[in-house]
Length: 313
Ligand code: MEV
Image 1 (cartoon, rainbow, N blue to C red):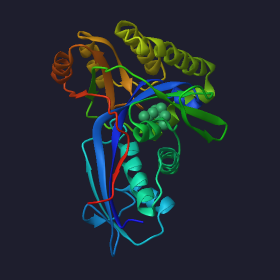
Image 2: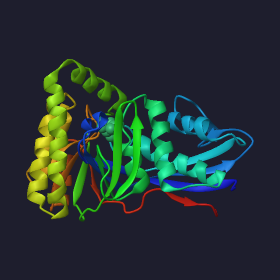
Image 3: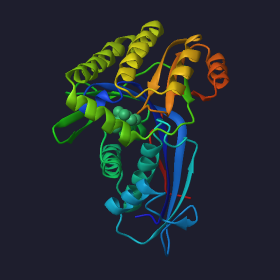
Image 4: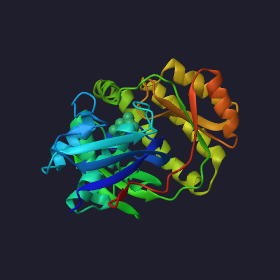
């Protein structure tokens, strides 16, 4: 038992398979070195960053506490460099930081438990979605989601009829640039929009399956550092995401601008705003191109570290 803890978690981008993963299709995501930290300490009343704990502003923190904590009230201080509602996993990042911190305060914490509980917290808060974000942010590095267990399985998750098997994926050092449109994306709304299309239209179901196939085709080029092929597959994945209706004119502008200096580029995350991602050898040029059309660009690196815990403040 500890009465205070400092926990942190990275953010993430999805390289392949967003939206399709909600239906159990394969997907690949990596953790990013932009982190969220929480300092949690027992106190006389609940507060977050000096303000009362509020359902409206602290949804994920509140749900995590409701689901995992029955001790004294907590004072929580947060610090994050992840832009919110951007598609970079800001909600998964705060959720995993909170969940790992609360589990550590209760005295037991391991990666699998953090991933599974974090998915429950995110799902309860958003009412939809897959475990890809919370699993990536928990584990760090790269992950591959498959519909059956294979070598390098980390954990499996089931919700209704859908099963996700989360695997560790060894990745080369990818030079990536993330472009934020400045327009907040609303993940649950975008997931719902795709769900309506999926339920109603067999063409949409085919598109989802096709995205799953692209993800599988990306595994080998990722292992072999075949950037040309990875880029081509990112472009194909992007076309299919656009067909699903999760594009946005600002995302398109940034993608087109980045392609001059990139192997490939695509929407990343839920879309409808939020972020795009480009794979490149020329990060500085891509940053410049994205900012020239009004986006905010981040040169990003894979985070080897998933969640971290420090008990001795
Ligand atoms: C959001 O980062 C990824 C989506 O596939 C939703 C999910 O998997 O929960 C759009």
